[in-house]
Length: 500
Image (cartoon, rainbow, N blue to C red; front, side, top):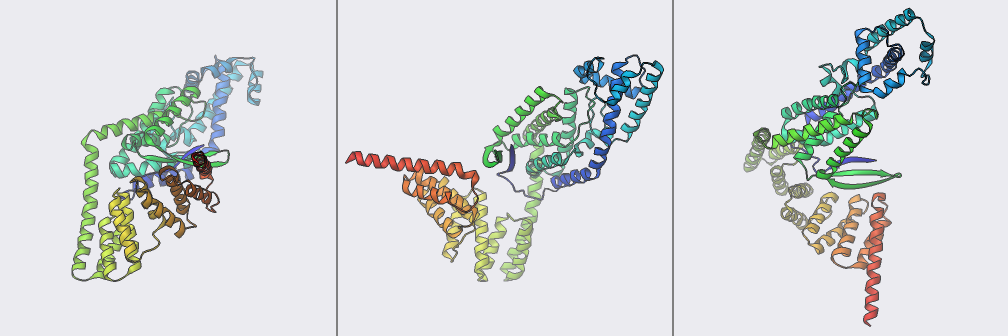
């Protein structure tokens, strides 16, 4: 089983209030409706089944309009099942089917059909699924909206909400709240309409946010094609993790939906074609927004609003610092970074304040924060300057994650000796952190692949193998590294012996 657990951009410029609001609405609606839907489903299914059995065995009976629509839709969407129902020699489905076969009085049969039709009208008029879920054979206009907020179970809800969060909050950040809201609601309706086109006679109620969420995934692919998505793979009770770019992972998901939709149709109980339609709609809209001024206009408005707020508070803090009011300036900046934790200007000013007040620990914390922000902005040179400033002012133990990111930056820049040195120090200073375990693997890889220091590589891999930090997902990598390092050492020994 493959499950996405995150991606490279898990932050946003503002609180994703629309995405959070959509999730809250879905959860609240689920809690208030799931009990009624579960209670109503058996009676509704029974009423439909009884009418279909009667109509199939006795086509001469007169049907009320609601029952006639039901039968006509079932014939169109399930022709094979209808042919089976008409066969008088088929197996008996249930007690009702057996009793109907014993009836031969036309008047009695018509009374039974009328009674079942009345029961169907009664239960369907009270059914939340019939009124608010989407039924392709007879779509209720309001169901284009309401069906997107109904779910059939906890797993259905949780799965949709997790995908909504992963894809939704970054699109909300990129497009702005109003554009994102309109897109989500229209995408849900478009996905349902596409499903209706692919299953025109279906009488099965369709519900769930998956069509709208699939549209978010399609838009995510177009908007962030190179973003890496972290996946968890549960295989024979072992969990493996890997990262894959959106440009091949999401199209693969789309192809799987198309395959299952073609192979199973509606028999699987999953609206695969709603997913396909939503995905295609989202991708097309995102492509269109990229080539118009609409996205740029909304994004510019967001940036101007954020910049105005930031400039006001930062200018106020700077003015206070110029007048020597360091406490007031610090309070202003502290409030600002609580709302905008990625404000580099604010953290730089806080560094100055802490240095002037000789608050060494706070200065080191702010310095590491600017270091992390420079790394996030892909400015490793500035990040290394922050780190050197941290060391020169007495700093020793940098935060494990920032330190690990620094090591990776040095590795990427092919500064292998520096990266190896920092990997070793990180592993020594934070021995109980997962970052220390990853640092051992990073050091082992450099020694093995870049510096040809095979004995050290073997030592790092062996240390990682016995680490108390859980690492089942990395075990194959460790064992492969140990094997390769030993082979390299053996090859070097053989070569040395033959030279003598």
